[in-house]
Every structure is written in C-alpha cells, then in structure tokens.
Amino acid sequence: MKNLVAMALMSVFLFSPNLHAQNLLKDAVRMNRDLKDNKYKYKHEYNKTKNKVSRAKDNARDLADGSYVDKKLDKMEHNATRKLRRAKDKMDPRDEIAEEMRRDIKQGKRGAVDKWLAD
Image 1 (cartoon, rainbow, N blue to C red):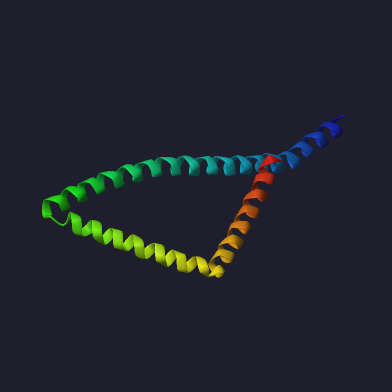
Image 2: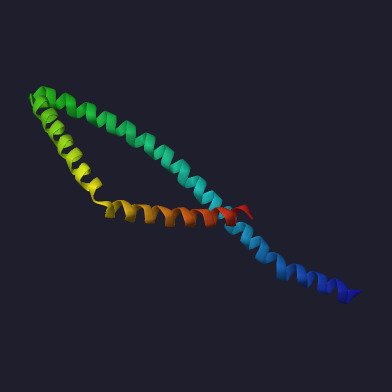
C-alpha cells in the first residue's frame, strides 16, 4: 500500500510540472498579445492627439510668418509626386510578390501559435 501511494505521488510530481509549465507558457503568450494590443491602442490615440496639436501649432506659426501658402503648395506638389511614384511602383510586380510572401509566412506563424493556444 505504501509503495502504491509513493508511486502515485512520484507520477504526479513527474508529469504535472510539464503540464503546468506548458499552461504557464500559453498564459504568458496570451497575456503578451493582450498587452501589445492595448499598448497599440493607447499609443495610437496618444500619437494622433500629439500630431493634431503639433499641426495646429505649425499652422499658427506659418500664418504668422506668412509662409502658410508656400508650405501648402509644397505639400500639394509632394503629394502629386508621391502618387506618380506609387503608380510606377505598382507596375513593377516584384515588390507585390515579396510582400505577399512575407504576409503568408507571417499568417502561417500566427495560425500555428493560435492552434497551439487553442489546445
């Protein structure tokens, strides 16, 4: 009887730490994902507000200097040039193919982790 109890206790100590450690790892991965999601949300809102304030200050300073119109024209010219550059880049399929491959690899990794977490 004592041997049976001793064997049962040994089996519990041998097998349960691995299961417990695996659950801890899964919990850590889940918690890390949640933290990243929340961090992104707050950081995004903070940067959005900071950029609005910065833009308003820049516009007020430019109006006082008299360079507001020049900067707006430069911005319009820059945007038109950027649109032309993007149109040229879309005609070259190599970048799109590489991007698609990267996206597929990333989705595959994410799917594997999701399956592992679902277990």
